[in-house]
Structures are given as structure tokens and as C-alpha cells.
Length: 430
Image: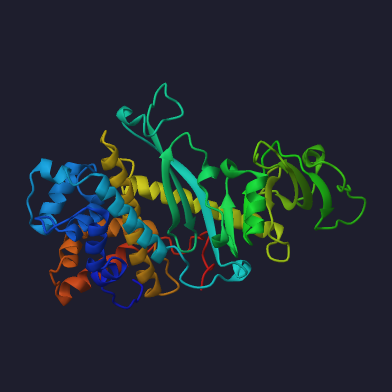
């Protein structure tokens, strides 16, 4: 077992969500107007940490978890009434606070990423809902699913937490929910093909940010230069369209400067055309016959072709986060036809992710550098002590023996058992 310094989990979570802040946010959102039988902080922690209770996450299982953790018994109808629009506003405010405190890397990046403030990934995932929610969350394929929610997420790969979150119907395009502004300055964003648009890439450049995206198969920019010279009678690519030459290239690595012309969104019924310049990289992986093509604005002096491909592979981290949200935090278990219930449970799962990441950071900072603390294993370990944690967060003072027991459990269960396994982001951050 890795040697690590002891940490108080309840104290860590109180720093993230002080009881005074929870009470104030509950009043501001209208969740409570006077002192009631249910304390807003108790309700908050039960909903956020109750993801591991029962065979499925439901209002009934959360009510039983709340009663067991707080000692307050409520009839089902009374507990169900707490899931309303005011609760959604309260949890949305709490998620905003969590994002502000967990999204950034704990330290500067290093190695080939030292030039960037952070590495972020944008993506979206779909959650199926009851048909009764079709008007609020219309699905794309209504022949088998009439209602579906799309969760849009921008997350820090190194910080392992969300930077921005929004929920829409499935039909909303991912690009429309990506907030591009001054916050991208100095950051590297990774995209899949769902975000591919020259105008989006140019906006990131103008805001001082960087990006790496897969290149669409039908993209055909004009080649105006090469970042790498080849000996002998190699094919000269300048002046050709990429689509004319890319299938005939025998090089292991291709690194080009390209020119693209595109139309901007119409304004006052007028469309304007814009010209932009990007870098296109082609890399063969293993024994593949064809190149994998990427488009970026990162100079070759910062990321070489192989480093572009390696860094883009870190986009898989957001897929692991979606899997964690749906499997470990049970975000996809939304067995309700009431919109407020569905939204409250989604926000609670996202806050649960932020809570888990806060504990993960604390453990990582106190664990030997030779061992890796797994984000997903921390979430699973928290589920086993969630009831005791809620009681401690609400005022029950755990003795030193119990605190040591929690710490040993997390220190043991959160460690990645595959010590020698290479990971995409190992060594990226100080």
C-alpha cells in the first residue's frame, strides 16, 4: 500500500460545500422559506451521495438512504415533493460552485504540454427518457425513442472535472452548446468530428486558444506549405488539394499548412466569406495503411506530429467520464416522467462527480508519486461509506478510529492495481 498522509474526508467536502453556503443557496433558490423538518444541507448530501444505494437509483431508494443517514423519516409523498423547479435551481447553483473549484489542474502541465494552461475535451452523450418528456426533450429517432436528453460537457483532462455543463434535447447540435470566449486563451481543446467546423476553429484562434480535431473525410483544403522536408524526389504537395494526394502518400508522417475558405453565419441577410490557415497532420498508427488525419493550430515547435496524435488520444478520457456518470453514478437511471425530477437527478450525479474528484485530488496529493489513484475507484469507494459520510457532514463527529478506517479504505481501494500500465495522461501535470 502506498504511504500517504491522513486526510479528513468530511472536512474536504465541507470546504467544497460549507453548510452556511448550502443554507444561503437554498433560500436564494426558493427551496426553503422557513425552518422545516428537512434541513436543506441534509437533503443535498443525501441526494448527492445516495447514488450507491439500492439496486437502482430512484426517489424511493433516496428516501430510504435519507432516513438511514439522517434519522428523519418522511412519507413518500412528502419526500417526492422536494423534487421541483426550486430544487433544480438549487442544485444548478451547487454545480456551478463545484465547477469553479474542481475544473482547473492542481499544478502546471509539463513535458510537451507545458505551453498550455490546461487540456480540455468537449463532447456530448445521450440519455433516454420517458416518452412523456417528449415536448421538453425531443429525441432524434422517434420511431423507438420519443424523448432523449443530451448532456453537453467540457472537461479538463488533467483536472478530471467538468468546466461547463448544459442539458438539451437530443436534436441540439454539440457545436451550439460550446462556449468559446476568453476562457480558451492558452488552453488546448480536443474535439471529435461532431464539432468539426472551420468557423469554430477560427474563433478559438482569435480568442488565443488552441485545438486539435480529427479531419473530416470530405474536407479538401488547399495545401500552401509543408512543415517537414523529405529527401530525394518526394512528391511536392504545395498547390494541390489534400483530397487529390492524401491516398497516394507513402510517408509515415505528413505535416502541412493549409488554406480554407468558408462562409460565416449570415447577418442582416448578408453572408460573408472568410479565409483561414491551419495545420493538417497525417500519422500512421502501427501497421495501418492509411493515415489518421488531424487539423490543429498548434505550431510544430510546440507539438510534433506524433505528439499531436498522442495528445488527441486523451479525448478518450471524456468517454470514461460519461461511463462513470452512467454506470457508477447512475445518471442514466431516470425512471420518472416529471421534468424536475429528471433534471434534479442529472445535476445531483454531476455534483457527485465533482465531490468524487475533490476527494480524488486530496488522495492523489497525499499518495506516493509511484502509485496512481484511480478516479473511478474513488467513486466506488465513496459509495460504500456514503451513509456515514452524510451523518458526519451534518454534525455527527466521527472519532479518530473511524476517520482512520475511512482513510485506509480509500487509500487501499482507490489505488490502480495495474501499477505498470501506461496511461494517456501520466506525467502531464506537476
